[in-house]
Image 1 (cartoon, rainbow, N blue to C red):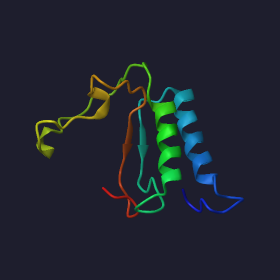
Image 2 (cartoon, rainbow, N blue to C red):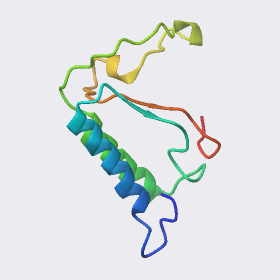
Image 3 (cartoon, helix red, strand yellow):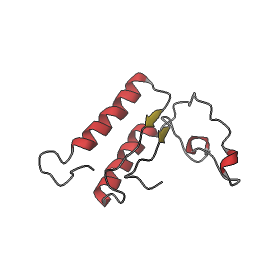
Image 4 (cartoon, one colour):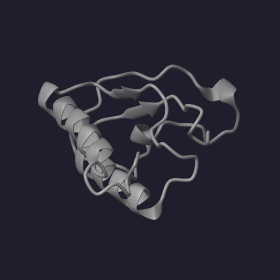
Length: 106
């Protein structure tokens, strides 16, 4: 959502993010690792959240098998700790891992 109110460049970040997701699908990537600052602001606008969730749903949900094996993260606390692609109620085909940056709320 960087500079989303700019009439010329307002959609640039969405276009770039969608291009990355498309390349992942084309390359049949095992996963997508985002190195921080998924959003430009700590509290992104509703428009930014909706567009981001629509893209994640379109490109990351599906029936393709997951080929990565997660490390044991049970030491992070809680009995319910799991990655979303292991949830039997979700069909994730492209796992996305995000390292939060200084603009993201962990």
